[in-house]
Structure formats: C-alpha cells, structure tokens
Image 1 (cartoon, rainbow, N blue to C red):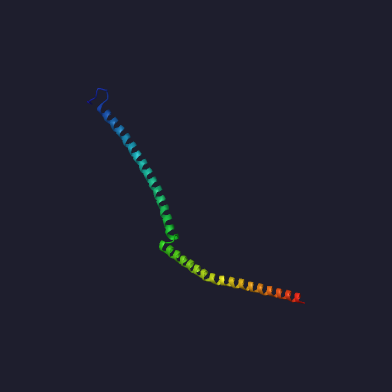
Image 2: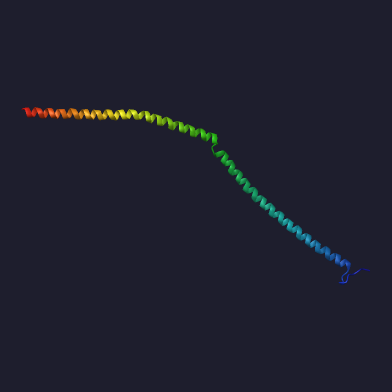
Amino acid sequence: MTPSDPGGISLREYVERVLAERDLRYMQMFRSAGEAVDKAESALREYKALANEFRGTLKDQAVNFMPRAEAENRFMLQADRIRSLELAERAGEGGSKAAKEARSNSQWLIGLVVGIAIASFGFYLSSK
C-alpha cells in the first residue's frame, strides 16, 4: 500500500523526483563553483605574473639606479670643480688683460717711433 497525493503520483515517485531535481541543482552548483574557482585561479596567476614583473622592475631599479647620497656627493664634486675652474679663469683674466694692455702700449710706442722717424726724415729732406 503506497499513499498517493491528489496529483496521482506516489510518494516514492515524488521523493525520487525531488531528489533527482536536487541532485541536478547540486551538480549545477558544484559545476558553477568549480568554474568560479578556475576563474579565480586564473586571475591569481595573472596577478602573480604582474606582481613578479613589477618586482623585477623594482629590482632592476635598485641595481641600476644611483642612491641619493651618492648622487648628491657627485653633484657636490662637480660644483666644487666648477668653482675652482671659475676661480682659475678669473685669475687668468688679469694676466690676459695685462698682456693686451702691454701689446697695445707697444703698438702705440712703435707707431710713435715710426711717426717721429718719418717727421725727422721729412724735416731732413726739407732742410737740404
């Protein structure tokens, strides 16, 4: 004797249908969960690849870039060299100015001597 519901199916059939439907739903849930896990793993792999690339870039920068203290020391050395060159140039300017003035004075003196010689020669010729 099996009890039946008003729809005309037995309780056993009803329970089997409910169990089959729930099995189907659980299988869909597990499949969806598996797909979600696969997507999450794929996204995690991509993230790790990008993170490793970023770490590699940082490592290259740490190896190739100059530390700030070293850069400042080099800039200070260059500034000191520039200052010493400026001082040497200023000291040399006085000497070159004096040389220019001496050359100019000697040119005036030569011109004066040549002028006096020409005037004397002209005076000598006119007195004869």
